Length: 406
Image 1 (cartoon, rainbow, N blue to C red):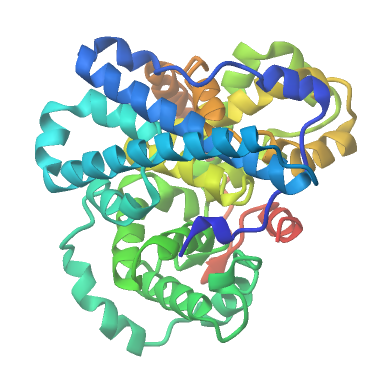
Image 2: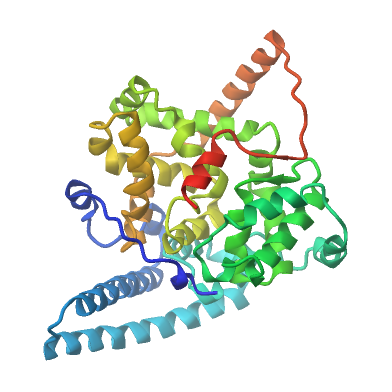
């Protein structure tokens, strides 16, 4: 299912934000300095492809929006398309080789592989590469899938209620009897049966929905199981949502350290981090950005984990600090919903570049994790609260957040 079937974004940032985004084409990220000349040349080719794709889409928009069409514009467009087709062919050959020689690339060309993934995995290779990245091929649980579908789950009603609000504008999921809604229900139900502690959590359907746009339901189920087990997602979606609390705590530290003025403004307006960042962590920006941009973030998440969510989140705040400082709580809430999601529609590379300019210290994050655990332990000692367990749960504040975006 092509990502291009998503509705075209209509909003754009204001002029000052656009000025902040007018950086040069994305240059290789920090790890690239250790690559060989041949590998750097390869990255430069991919950069050129991204630049031509962007130029091609802009020229198409320009031609569609203009009544006049000069011969010279057609020639330049044709030339760009010709260059692009050669680069696309090179990319196909490259990623075909990577998929076929996966273990070799993981062992001996890890830095180059990381850089290539940051440039974006080609759409047609995402299914196999995502499965390889999270080691979801040949999982034993795949053999249980058809049997799980014959069973009933206590979460079925909640899943049915939510799937209609998952990518409602996407052709694959439109309509109650659509194939997309059917397979989404199947995967969510199957997972609720293999992990009864988590069951079903609102928000996880967006992750599964993205997987189903790329691969058959059995494979999507295996990848989702692996993401839950190995990528901290299970901890995020547990009933206590303690991991979400930790992520918010760590993000607030980064905000306070790197953007102290904005942090002070947020506090003065009682604009809590959880109000805008919870869905970033729970849906990995899939309810924030249009799919072509969100999928680029997801590519990186599949290789580097939740670190990319912290990086992208802080990058968005850095880009928009000046505008946000002038708004009250209601204004900021509107700005997060209407302006921020579409700032990088035409160039996801700039978002990735800005994300890797953010300071991120894994040792400090580990220290904050211990700090948070000690703080929570102390709270539990002071006041023990026993909360009723429900089979399915919704994150605090997520219902309204997701509903407003669907």
